[in-house]
Image (cartoon, rainbow, N blue to C red; front, top):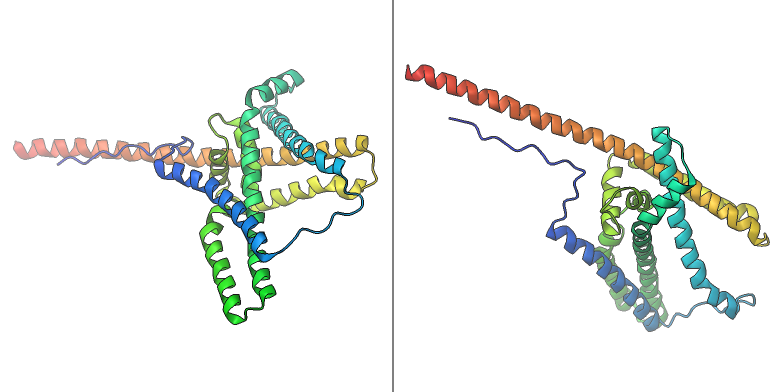
Length: 296
């Protein structure tokens, strides 16, 4: 009787994309868009209106807002590329040149950009879900329909949270931040795949990840607290870029720590699988020898 040989386990670093995972990624985007539509519908039904514009909110500021948003995304992508290159060269104790950073950023900028837009979509969907719940409860309280209307609003809110909550709130803050680094460093990861990869790397180190995400958030908010509203642009812009670069460097350093820990665990699993195969081979050889003795 020979024992069945088991194949060694696959490395955890290999991107295995099944049909179920692909459908889940598509459902994430679909659910986010549905949340945005439900939010607008709930606001229309509840009769809530946005606050009136203040005196300093003019048309020029409204026209500049999309430009500012795109500039913010572009600065995040650039900061991630620079921070990832700096962290990688720091671990290798190599010399970091501006030409190498620009060459690497030119080669990989599309992946962090797609990932940044995907993370923004998830963040907007989370906020829209909370706003939708507020609109439901506000509409029930404003109509004065009694306990029946309030019960219906609470039931609809609970159903909406049960349906979309696990999809939209499935990823931690540090995973969303670190997904940009994953997209900039590793080939083949962008958008949902980069977020899933970052979530897998953070597993087992969530407490430290929460601390890193909190520190990065405080660093990014420091220029707005220190500079104030009246600070000139030539002071605010460099301060914001420096703070964003420092936050991205912290996430990149944490990424390389998580990846080293993940690779170490993966190699241990592979060594265990190889040793089990050797043991099974020796057992098969022993069975063959015993079988020969029985025949004689």
